[in-house]
Image (cartoon, rainbow, N blue to C red):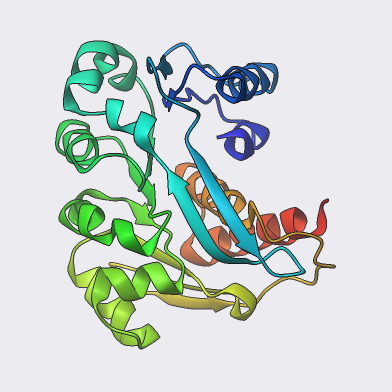
Length: 239
């Protein structure tokens, strides 16, 4: 959300947090960064959703443990009661694969603006598969693409995902750059941009933001992929 705001877009950050000090600090940081948090909800008795990451020496994630309990509040009823007016006026919706399946399905079925999705984890594949046909674009990494497609070969995985209907697939391949394909049959392989790797965390979020920005501003598949890789390089180079 912050990356997209830095690209000049107005962002309404809809999420669920807990009642702990971390939740308060994160929401305060979001507000200071210029995000609209009016529709975020604090869930009684819960903690801030977190990922505990085990990383390599250069910051690349090796394993992760999740605490997503607070996000269960973002179900169909929550969006129906609290968010219909604001979501009916936005230009796009970016979905996080960590949302409950019920919430993801409701958003995909209800709104006709461009929908974007970052799966977030291979284990979210089962929730995302049913909404693929509703997506303008999806940005999985290789592990997530393999889980979505039940194939561990890149081109086969991409072909199977595209048969499920998303408009665009932007497949992040870590050091091998990005492979992108759309429903018009276009495909492009974009290499990584030169960068002195300080930290790989947040690179995927930066790429997703650039993809959303590119699609909304009419960039081509190639141009959007280039923008995503430049965003990844800038993020990887920052401490």
